[in-house]
Amino acid sequence: MTTLEINSLDSIRETARQFIAQMGDRKVFAFNGHMGAGKTTFIRAICEELGVKESVNSPTFSIVNEYEAADGQLIYHFDCYRINKVQEALDLGAEEYLYSGSLCFIEWAENIAPLLPDRIVQVDIEENETGKRTITIHA
Image (cartoon, rainbow, N blue to C red; front, side):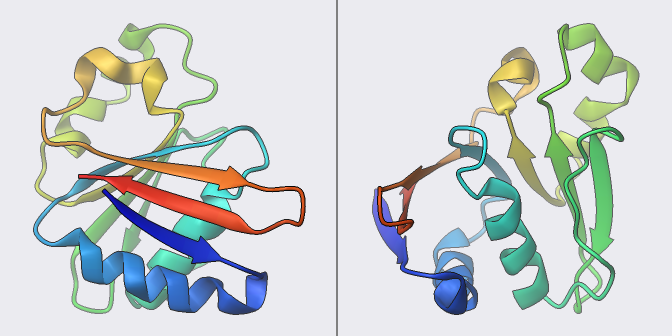
């Protein structure tokens, strides 16, 4: 378990760099936290640090967005908040993305739990009353 801190939006890119250094060869990450905890904002910072040039937005309605990192690797960003049944994720081809060997960052992963690989990394984001975020990586 590793813990990182985001003290303000000014420091989020540094925390994203620290997160990337912790990723190793792991590919699938579940970002957990309440609505508004900063999951999308942190994923955006990670993608920017990986060299993604296109706009990184929450895939709330599309469910999954695809980005390309500076080194050419594909990154899939899921927002499963609106998934009510696992079959919906299957219909979108979620398994192909999750087992592609590409990076997958998943918000609301609990909604597709039966599809998730065994080696998923849980990333908990908690916000305190001052707005500071604590990122806990369970690898």
